[in-house]
Amino acid sequence: MKKLLLAVIMLLAFTSNASANANKPLIFGLQLIDAIEYAAGPDAPGYRDEGGYRMYLSLNASTMFAITPEFAIHAGLGIEYRYFSFDIRDTVNAMGVSTTGGWTAESSENEDMDYSVGLSIPLMARYFLFDGFYGELGTIIDINFFEKFKPYFTDEYVDISEQNTLNVGIGGGVGYIFSFGLEINGMFTYGLTNLYSNADWVGHRIYLNVAYWFNYR
Picture 1 (cartoon, rainbow, N blue to C red):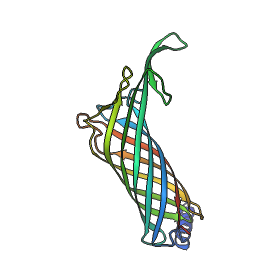
Picture 2 (cartoon, one colour):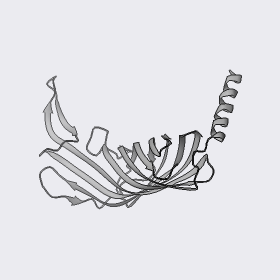
Picture 3 (cartoon, helix red, strand yellow):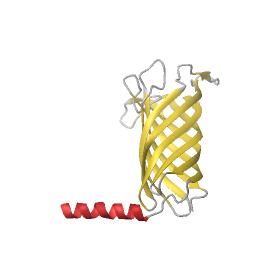
Picture 4 (cartoon, rainbow, N blue to C red):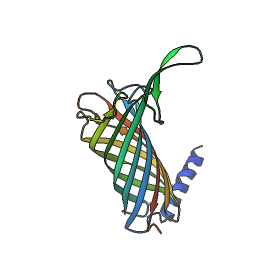
């Protein structure tokens, strides 16, 4: 078993050193992020409750600074959009039990709706384990411009003044870059700061990212 483990470690070390994964000191790209953000904390709603989770989208301009062919710093700047809608209608399930609505991605006349817009600033350390495949770890900073909420009984949005302007999370993930510059990445971010000034409520995210590096090769 020890010999097998040693052989695997030596193979990973060889493939890492043999591959030129970031063969230019500076690489530019665009990154599209699709994620789910879910609430956590003593004051946070449950997953099935209003505000329990949100859809998250971000479009980032990204830069990769290669320290060595295997190690790089990945930084970005992008516009992010967070959204949820909640169907408040009372319904009766197949067992005849009354239930209360739920989160939905479809629009109706009986929904509370909420959205926010801001900046996303990721700063990640990336290490290529072997050609094209990497792991990364770092921080993501959110600068929130505004958040607006519309209850179902009106057509007007109101500002959420309790939203914190700055939020920080730590994230890690794995991904793969094809030789022509296309990248696919999965990541998890753990929220460290409260989303609102009046509540102990953070947001964790599960990401699926697609990127393209224009001068990767």
